[in-house]
Amino acid sequence: MTFPMDDSRPIFMQIAERIEDDIIEGALPEESQVPSTNQFAALYRINPATAAKGVNLLVDEGILYKKRGIGMFVKTGAREELREKRKGQFYEQYVVTMVREAAKLGITAEQLIEMIRKGDKAR
Amino acid sequence: MSVVVSAKGLTKTYGSFKAVDDVSFSLEENRIYGLLGRNGAGKTTIMHLLTAQLFPTGGELKVFGEEPYENNRVLSRLCFIKESQKYPETFRIRDVLETAGTFFPNWDREYALALSEQFRLPLKRKMKKLSRGMLSSVGIVIGLASRAPLTIFDEPYIGLDAVARSLFYDRLLEDYAEHPRTVILSSHLIDEVSGMLEHVLLIDNGRLLLDEDADALRGGAYSVAGTGARVEEFARGRRVIRRDSFGSLASATVMGTLDGEARGHADSLGLETAAVSLQQLIVHLTGGTSERKEAGGR
Image 1: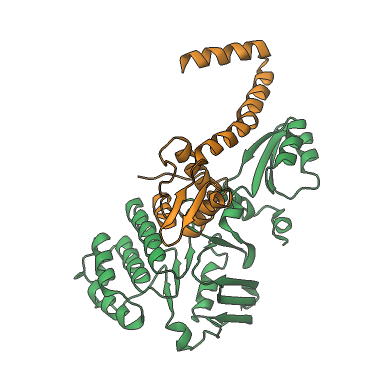
Image 2: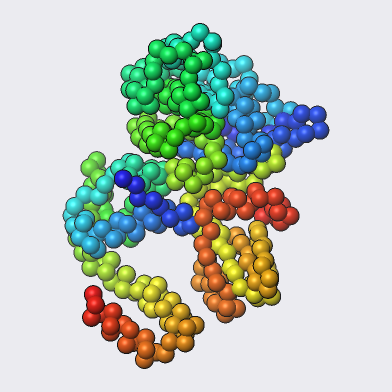
């Protein structure tokens, strides 16, 4: 089983994002233990120091916390916090790009809204 | 963190040919380094200098704080797995492993035998009867089981299939986690090994072109494409490492992060932007374009 990393962005950021995804999707519940740096290194075939940098980023952001001698755990409230953070990024990452591409193709705002409604029904 | 290798102005010349040209770098303890570059760039010469198989023409080289040449305190802490290691004609794999055990103070015999089994090495077979891939596997087994504080692998995978290479990468990371040591990995297969590297040294024409954390290089360059004039306008004042054009269209690969400023500038000029992978970046930097020197000017 391999989980290839995207080679055009820093790996530590990708590690942090994957942990965030697991927390948002519930695969890593609050107060559960996060895999160790060496487990991440083996799983993704990456340098352990790089994996540690990704984990420590989330410690700095208050998403994970360290229990001495045991490992890293997901903080209570982390899931809600991450959802809010991702909502903030949603506009930049998806809406702005979508509107720009739509403008290029000559899709009007009304047509775009209609498409979103259609997509929402289909989900 | 202590320094394992320190090179200052390291130079090796053969007549008028500068194989290694005024190279300075230091390697810190317990990190995995990638020594990258094209064939003939000078990587192997550097490894031979580090391991005292060659004597430098100029500059200063310290390994574990001492000069390595004929210095057993240094050499006993090194393991160098060469691309084309020669073995005594009559030796079987078993003999090679037993002999290795007498060279390396940290040698783990059990581990060497377990690895041999995983790499499906026939211990009783004579070295001269081994395939290219099996010879590489023997080198990998020795390199890992030596647990030498400075372990150097020079293109260790010649003739190995994808399965055996995967096995090497997994065992290397696993054993490095349990027994940290300084590793230098020289490789052409940048895509395969880049994730395992903490730091990259890029050599080109005997010179050190990059000395940078591997993760900092990811996202350290991007490309823009659009009409030639617009691309030129964007490129002004930026560090361009490669230009391509096709008809009225052009693209430029730029060193730097694709941040809000760069993205905004590209958008305003109607240019498309794209990320550049570590492998692409290295290919661009060592591709022999006339702008290479400009990019290396650090």
